[in-house]
Length: 189
Ligand code: ADP
Ligand code: 5GP
Image 1 (spheres, helix red, strand yellow):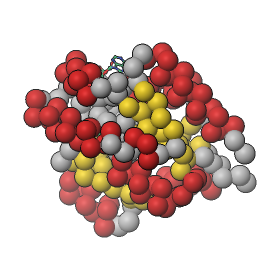
Image 2 (image 1 turned 120 degrees about the vertical axis):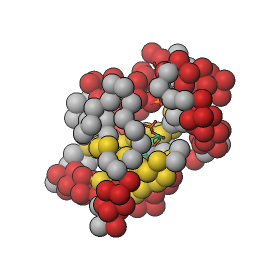
Image 3 (image 1 turned 45 degrees about the vertical axis):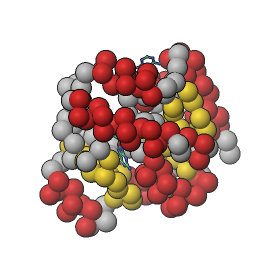
């Protein structure tokens, strides 16, 4: 059985990654979405078990001690982790897996899976536009937005360290490029 592909998407918070991924999941149904565990509070519109497994910090630390996470990171003062059994099973059965991780998660995936991890960095047109999008989304407090912007500035410095880049300026153009990159990866032997 041919091993499945690993596709990892990384973008500073507010870039538009979730919006792009929602469409990608519909257009490429063969991709299996990796549902991470997180200790952050659920946002309006999010569904437990679909967007994330929303769990307590205590449960997160328990799972972590049982080596249930292939990687985990503390992002914006919350914990996030990727299920190891999900990846092991997916790779064995030839499934194509899609991940939404921060840069620390990308670095871990690179360390563990080497060139088997296909990492796509999505960047905002500018930090000012990123701030505008975070405010327009209206899901986070001023303090959380400030934390996300400070983190974004650091993440943008890493934009050339991965396999592919997409600038999410005009949405349709960005989506077309993302779709083309992903279908090229899936088509590769
Ligand atoms: P992320 O998942 O990267 O944190 P979201 O997908 O939640 O970001 O997008 C943040 C906000 O920006 C949302 O309100 C979304 O509708 C908007 N958005 C996404 N892409 C674009 C774009 N290309 N131009 C303008 N606004 C966008
Ligand atoms: P958000 O709270 O906006 O959904 O996500 C915040 C950040 O955490 C994003 O950069 C997202 O990619 C990242 N993230 C989500 N799940 C995981 C995970 O399992 N591991 C890591 N390392 N980062 C994650």
